[in-house]
Image (cartoon, rainbow, N blue to C red):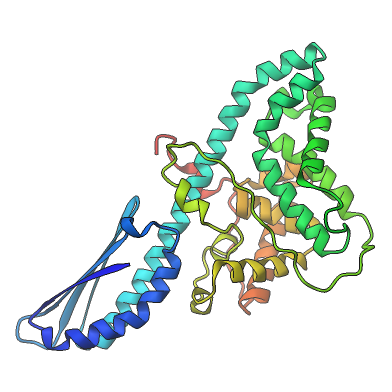
Length: 351
């Protein structure tokens, strides 16, 4: 990332400040790697206040959809840069959290729009007993289902309940499509929805989860290769999330800002998170991933898993505490974080 410096009445300290900042820069670049190089720029201005020893600094980082600004002052240039670094890291992480929340909202809105446009045609095909036409019309709407099926299969293989390659993502999604055809008239609310399809998938996964482990394996996690979720061509966040790993610390514990994790590659974070998730009770793990990675509300997850909503809320909070203790070594009591209506759902539809 290009860094432009400007010094006013303190050029004598400029070389030391540049050298010190060069050591801090990799932390920022790791967090910003998914943004194109040509769309990110950092400008730093440092000025001495009058004839005093106090320094003032203004740091501006230009990113897609946002400009971050940090202002600090101190008598020590070393302390000044440390404070700027900490504040910039906080702002970058917060920006990425909001960006992901907005993207999840837009994605969910797009899916539900597609469901609404297709439901009448599906109903006609079902009424006319056109099974193949029904399934082929519904298949393109299975992106979200495929992603969960992929994640579930890798985990079941890691637990030894499936042999490698015993089942494919297509096997699971085809089973969901068949169930959708057979149970279309019994769908809740008599309207096609991603929640209903996820409920059908959850039943398939639960049946596989109930199988005893029959494969001798090492205690390792099978890497989860996230499937591409094709976005609209005009989606401003498509490139950002094309390079974004879903299961990182920022995704499962967005309020945690651990410096040690900033040094890890996304793939390393992903492996640690997957190992921690693999140790959870299956229904709790699914409830947590539905909420943390896909933005389903507790009420929607209750419909998917056919369990009481308060039980879902408790499982999500307990999963968070388990992750804090397992992944970052703390289990300090905190205020409940599960909102029945998550932050992204309160965003304006026009945004």
